[in-house]
Length: 220
Image (tube, rainbow, N blue to C red; front, top):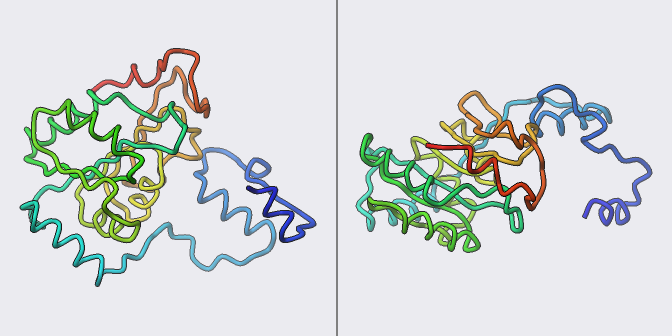
């Protein structure tokens, strides 16, 4: 995709993140460094996302009403899916289930699963392993309603994926099961906690020839 873009805009020069990646910077910091390198001024470097309320507030509030969820509940959103084809980013369904059941038992949490329709099968595996009730909004929300929902959650637990970055930009309490993702793709922000395995840290491969050691080593 990058090569097609370079061709279409007839670019004479290109700067890739690998050329300026340094230290433990996250991807959003690296991309800001790219802009600085080509002398584009940066007026605000805050990693913060504004939420547009009106329509999306109505969508989520109507869903909450039907599900019996209130703003006073300890709402925990979970996203178990990952980018298509990246099998190394999936954690084990029974362990997701253990986490969700623990939060329900000990914190009376309302567990809400999110994601695209592509994530439905993997989400159902988790729900089928759970002992307690959870709610699935997988495939039912667009990105704007998802953002509003995340803004109302107390905690978000996820794989290394798009919703992770949305939650981080909202400064939500966030736990990301990063597995094969390189550190510069990890969730940024002071409220983000990234979980990975030293055995396969940052392999960044779509498939695994080591029997998914990393996902097995991360326990509840």
